[in-house]
Length: 310
Image (cartoon, rainbow, N blue to C red; front, top):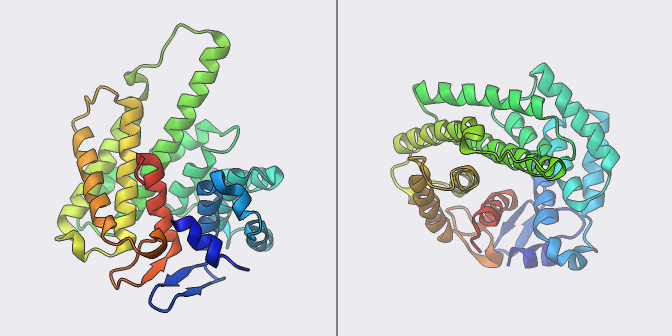
């Protein structure tokens, strides 16, 4: 249903928020990161309906922000991450993707990416670009894991930690997918008899286990009732669990990890809570029941794509 929203309401500029009470769409050009993320969501999730979206100004909207990035790469560094994701999803502008990716790898090497959002976002996206630099991505995962371990020990535990934990979990998932794909191609070419074992990927499972424990510590201390949690938090809580469960499905096929069942149970719990926030056009609304910010729905739809929910 969300596709009909974009078909009906995506005019000259990507929608930012929808008010179901007034049936009005708001745009917000200043929100470069959320807007490029939304355009990427449309590009990724509308692939089976590409013909229907041909008249929508996705490329011109993306170009608007790409020109801003050219003028000020540091100011638009975070937006460039989602520009890459959108261009890759649409299969266009390979040279732009290469230029922005090189800039992000340079920032990774300098350690200048903001760690709560940019670091995880960048690793998640760069792992999906052709010829990813696995050494750089692995080093970034080590930095992230150290931060997660500090969160696990730290007091207090702010609810906003969940945003970083979610991007870390997406990063692990993306890197695991990339490494498994590379391993498959290598084994096919070499006709190797060596098959990857669970032990080969144990550090990824350990990372997810640390993330899950830090996540649950935060939720147990900060969330008394899911009904009281605003939708933007519920969305990333659900997205976190879908990515954590996906890593478990890829690497822990026998269900040996003690957290495996609990991760699935938590995912279903958040899915049920989000279902109560679903409204017109299949968008996910704030607790007020009538305002929906489009990037929040994007997080939920991303989780659905991973978990298989509709």
